[in-house]
Length: 609
Image (cartoon, rainbow, N blue to C red; front, side):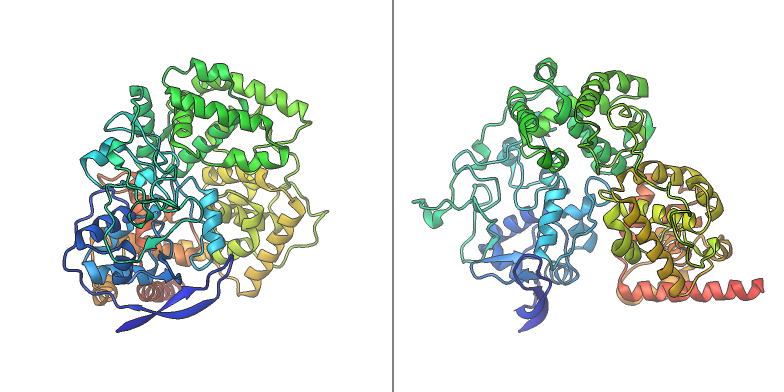
């Protein structure tokens, strides 16, 4: 018996759907327990081997939502995230908790090491674009041969392009099999293979890549993974890798002595990597004592490519993630002294030679900016100002003399964050490489500018917005706008859409819901219990913050439920819990919580009148 599942038609950019009949997931006879931090693909391989079936057949038995394919099984977003249909199937077949299953996917790093903006499961081109943009490996994995000698578990973090060395064994990770030359777990040298659906288990201790013309059974590479050479590295490079992993795990990363978000920390890493690619010299590589010889050779080749690359391709290359573990190791060795600084002046001194080189090249290139579009964290902005001056073309800056009158919209009818759908459709394309929350805040400020605010700080003050957060986005994001005229045209359309949809008094809502610090147990129990969810104190607070955000258009970090912090929990962990609560909230529960919040708001409004 099967169940109909929505599956995208193959083809670049196609979002057409058809219904395919896939097996209904049944409880597996044996379910290996996922190891903490294990990647989903690794668990699939181990489980399939124990059951004596191909990984593709296992994926079908698990009820994973797949793309149609004749020879292999291609689950949607495999290793990236589970679709709702796939999650339901795996839970029914294994009994594993949703939280545990999601933690095995790259989704685990959302909002920190990775940004999932613009990823749309049915569109193959969307997935390809995301994989190119983000520093992650979708169809392959790096590995530590010494770890694989101890077991066949592949950690999820090996799929990050910032993965360079193994902290446990102090050795370099490897990207490709020395026998077949194909990236580990890719399957084919060309197009990624997918999961083999033919009968017969694949030994996870072997390479298993397909080698055309091979005399081996099935044409699969028999290289034992545990026998791949793994060069030792300097202890300082291990510390650098641990710093990366701590930030990826949202463990209160520090930058220049200040606590920052994981997203800000990784934005700093990416920007510094671009600076190094553009300005580091062979002497810099030679002087770096913590850099392994293999990394020095690999990074030298990459820097040579940047020097000779055509101007048109430079921008994309500067933003790319390290293609090899050796390149990642070289960049970490070069950049960690800056990332580990606790004082801005210390970092300024370290960066001074590179800033001088970049400034000279900028002058020679008559002001062209190869770093345009790269996020520029506030703490690095001043240190790199000489090399990356603030743009004078951005027009928050545009005056009403150059703009027709704004749509009739009062300032109290502007939320602190514009609606996600409006931002995605109208504004996002004008703010490349921008986190949605920051972009939505800037869009709200821009609408306030159209409605009479004379400056960005004045717009923030009139909206009652947190001045520090407003300054961060207005000082940084406006420099990413390439076409100021098109940006303000989009902002005008946004304001007109807000007025046409029926203005909401967000200022009044923030006032009336200022005491919404938790959702009562009886209310949340009635919503979650029918869905098999328990009610906890944390969920009561997260639910209150979620409702407040939905109704006030505010930043959830400023919700009354989070105002005084949580005893024994860091701000970062609370924020991560909030993100997970929202991501995993079933639609029916979201509708019920919204309805309860609207009723509460109506009661407050009635008393106020």
